[in-house]
Length: 190
Image 1 (cartoon, rainbow, N blue to C red):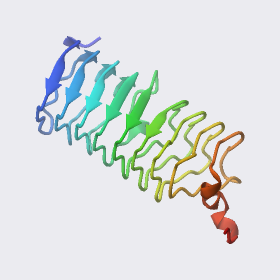
Image 2 (image 1 turned 90 degrees about the horizontal axis):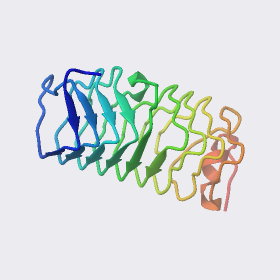
Image 3 (image 1 turned 90 degrees about the vertical axis):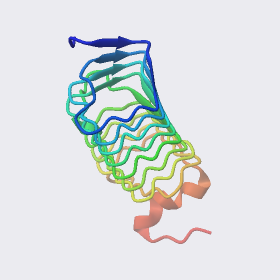
């Protein structure tokens, strides 16, 4: 446990410049409309925290623990979730922009990405079993050797998933999304 602890506190409209985020354990805290871009979250634990309308773009996540954390309406460009503490990594995203972020080799079963923009996100070697991508835009997202078994891609747009390079057993897709599975075969679908 860190020397400092913040429990059940609200942080509203705060701006954290590079290197000024206080190293501590944060539990049951709410971050509302905070600018956390370029913040260094290395070795910081966030447990049961909520981030609402925050900018976390290019934050450093070395050893950061996100356990039961939710992000709503957040801008999260270029985040490297593979650098997070792997123990208990549990996050949910709603209406977030995660462009150019990376979940390479992360274990994130049952993660919800609801109405998110995930352009050019790297999901290579990720375990996303039973995750939900409801209403999300996956333009340019990379799925390579990913476990997508039982994942829900219904109402998802702009995805390209190679069933031969990923585990897709019992995944859910809408008929309109079939082209995202068959693109490599150059099949015309009407």
